[in-house]
Image (tube, rainbow, N blue to C red):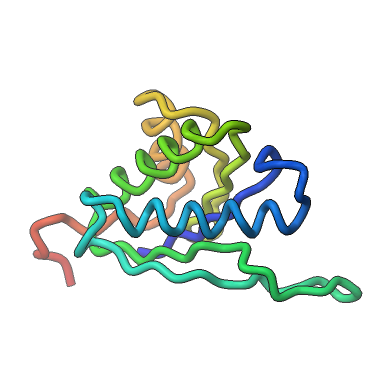
Length: 133
């Protein structure tokens, strides 16, 4: 399963540079997260620029997860990173075309994100035991 993450306002007053810095920081945080090791492949990407807009800044973290348990770990790690920032930025998560925004690091917030994705009809995560196709 693939989840795309982007960092929005609140990172600082650096505009796009601040967002790119936040994206790299989030990527490093996730790469160091023990619960995601071996469960996720991550990469930094530049989002396609709109016509007339210069692109090229690293502004997305693309995460491919191996199972549903890793999805909960990813959301928890993202929420914790957000709370660790001096000015908590908006974090946008997209899975199967359904976008949610992380508001805080509470267990209720993690449940809300998962509920939104489940109610949207997004495909269910693969079981952790590897019995899926």
